[in-house]
Amino acid sequence: MLAEYENNIKSLTKTISDNISELESYTPDDPDSVVARINADLRSARAELTKFKSYTAGLGRADKDVALARYSNLNSVVTSQQRQLDAVVHKLNASSLGGGDRGSQYRDQVDEQNRMLDRSTDRLRS
Image (cartoon, rainbow, N blue to C red; front, side):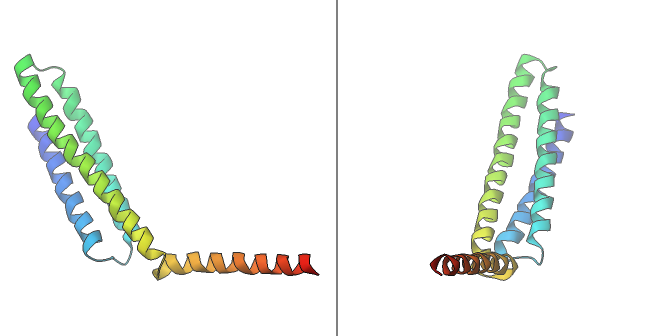
């Protein structure tokens, strides 16, 4: 059973890694959908980790120590991928402020706020 959980986690982390690489190498048409897929895979990997750790409770001492070491390694991979995803999302958000659809929305909002402030200032002066 542990091998099944481990294989599922490895498969998920491979998929997550591929999707993160896709985000890093180029910006897909819909990066939000790729991020959503990665987050779903991360949740699935964490669920498999929980099953993995729960299953170790019924093992003998020697087997349990080996299983917990494997759990620790798998958990560190998933945690690392979460951090990597967070960094990529931060990079995408920072770059989108300078251009692209999100950037233009942000600039439009700032421009509108500046116009409102200018009008308010003009009214206060008169």
